[in-house]
Length: 112
Length: 115
Image 1: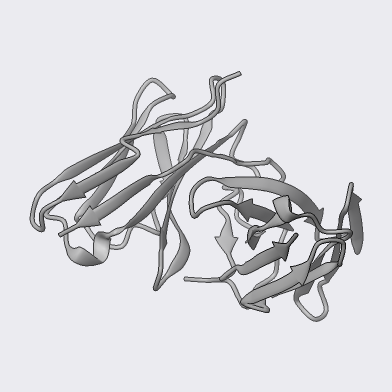
Image 2 (image 1 turned 90 degrees about the vertical axis):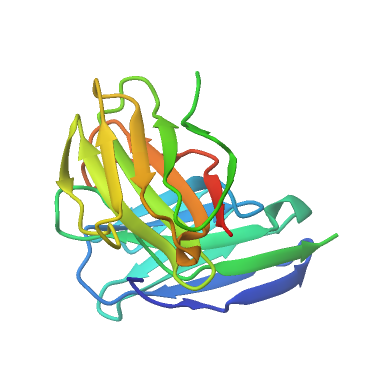
């Protein structure tokens, strides 16, 4: 079963603009991760934020986490056409297995 | 180095037939995961291996699904008596160890179509 919702389901922006995607989850977590998927195939890990962290940066990516609201956001700054992909948040709970519970995903289109 | 590989990349099968999907994890990765991605259900966890044992099989949707891992390396996901609702992309991932903080590396997936 899915962990939660992602919002928006689809986003279309111009190159150079910022893209913000939101993710909500239902249960307590150990950490939250964001993945990117091109063309409906393999996923690529982007960034991980632990439950005791509030914000994390990696290059043009900024992730925030609000455990009181059970939500996270991914900001991509200065977007490029190559950022066009689907983006998924995934949570890991308290179990020690590392299994990921994914959100529904946001499809981002960046127009050149 | 080589990433996670999966075979076949595409598989078309008739309803009722059995299929085997293969995953070769990154060398040295002890944890291996199978996930399924379908239009209706999104990305779902199926099963987790640590070494050759499967401590978490909670995501397998029915007893038609089984998986094994041998030599702490290659894993095979078997679907018996396939149904149309089994059509999906089956993704395999591996990580160094099966702990919460470890990054998972995904293979390109096997697209299964049941006709």
